[in-house]
Image (tube, rainbow, N blue to C red; front, side, top):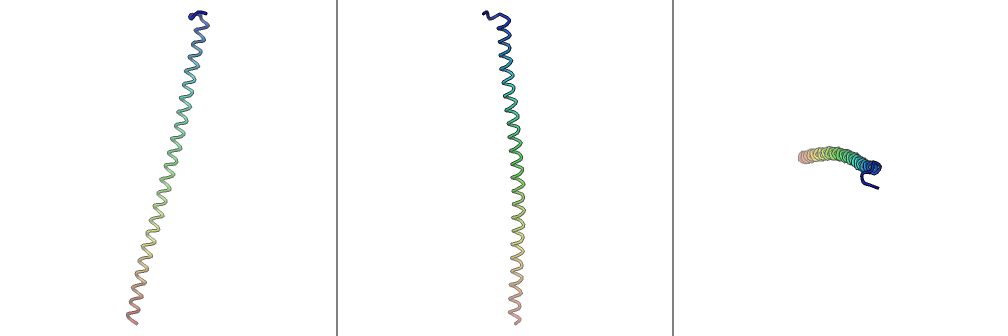
Length: 87
């Protein structure tokens, strides 16, 4: 079989075509997989940011309640002292 026969040339072109189509298919699959992973990562980061914002909001509420509680304690302590002095 000679390297210049038409059947050998067609077989070689067919193999080259299969190789290129395989490479292209692999590249496209990897590209789609990478985009899916990036999308999932962004969704997880958004969820983390929402959770952190919620935690900060709850921490602020706790801090406000503690401050209010301390203020009420001070008011009651002052009234208690005043009532003891007037007694």
